[in-house]
Amino acid sequence: VELTVSDRDNTAQAKTYKLSYPNGQTDKLELDYHQKLTIKFQIKDKQSDEFVRVQQAFLRFT
Image (cartoon, rainbow, N blue to C red; front, side):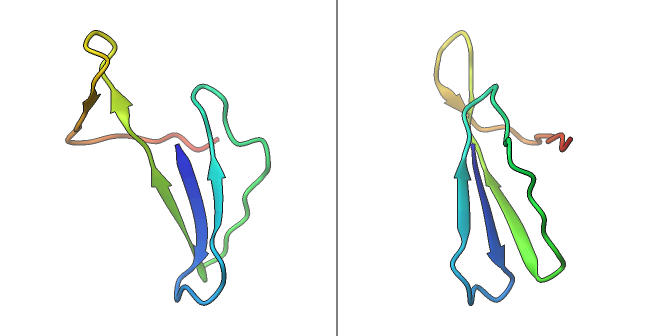
């Protein structure tokens, strides 16, 4: 999983956090309406051990 926090107009350097499941982000992220959060992840099938393309995915922020 890769989290990227960047400005809407991309003027400032983006900050990227790399996470490994099941460990989450330990630092608290604070964003305002001038910033955007991009999340990249891949889903792997347990049986075939291959990456799959899903139609819909849900993320939980806690």
